[in-house]
Length: 534
Image 1: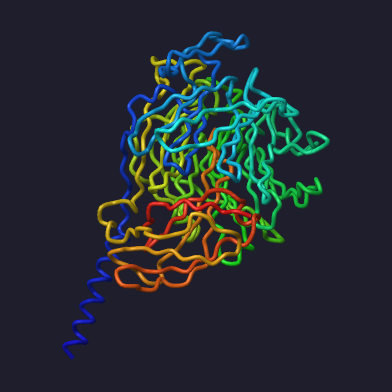
Image 2 (image 1 turned 90 degrees about the vertical axis):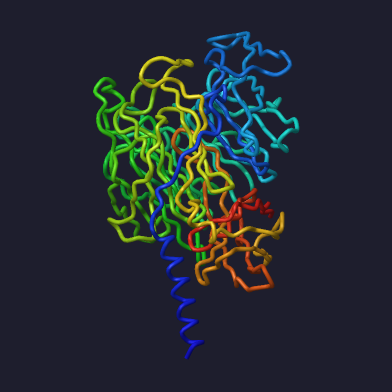
């Protein structure tokens, strides 16, 4: 009887502990760098716990000098031909220090994606950068690595406001851009660019068709969303397989952009669900002095369903220019943006300082939670990226053509981090620590992960692969989360062993470096980077 009472008390104690974590912590903010010297409109996280920051070069001098007295001379530069300042940098997350990088041609409104070997391929831009391929191979913090422009190879078409997506074989597809209705590949294929008439179409004369939302579905085709319309595209046969129903509510892409994610791939990976949230009104870009209210709706569609339809939901706040960031748990944070106007220099107002948590597993009408508001407006040319420790990195915001530090929304050089509620002190007992895991795995491979954790909640453990996307203009190019099939956890002394099976193929998870998170009772570990190879 006494033993039975003791076991019941143990259970009640654990239940009480778990229930404490269900009380929603709304997150905290911290400033990492007061002045990074540049305002990052393009941002990507590397496996070396560093972050690549990129601005445009045709902007005049930044506040970050190139090292060793170096300067860049560019006769094509429209603002400052002899420039001794940097327009790209690396942030070391261990020390929160900035190292300037040198980039030669203009990267304004460019695109990017990591190659299978971990090198960032960066494509296009403005002016003399429109047809350029650039590469950045990350290195350990404190080591030297820099941008390299490819010689004797250029994009077939100048790409400005395009989107990149890695394909199952590691090829990068480059889609869209101003006045561009073609797509092309890296490595380049014979025949040049491929005509793709779906691009370039818009429902109005604003041209709400830039930076299309592109998601690689687990069957290998591409879901491409542009303005209000989406198609399923077979890039091998150059055929549109499916035209989806029109998304109600107005334009969703630049200059009226909301944002988009593909929800976690799980189970047998046969189902892919796309969410598109926010945007501007049809005429917000044209009526530039009116600052019309942003959109409040989200559309959600099962892209793999034979009879797909948009399920509509309503956010607690109207928002355009928001960033949808996939969390290690499979939930989504919507952060940054404005509540009126559109994208463009000085065309938005009423900053949306309050992040929103989107929990896709909850019933329709109950999925959104308002989180702790920030204090720094993150408007045009701002970014949001998931960090390996589970925080969200916020960088950029420049509503002006040049660096401008006066007026209502000055150029923002500070870098912040938002810590979601799962990182609250009350959840520390539930946070796993990965003590052993492989550095490289192949497809369909069984491997073992060893963790330590103070309080393990059986049946509430997940192992997720999360990509490191290239983020710009309210969309994270290449973002995806893959939930792995697991066995365990099984106790082994003071540790637990988890048996994992890697993704089955490159359609589910293209070859690349992934952040592997172990999630216990909704609390993620610090990520362990794994190289998924074909």
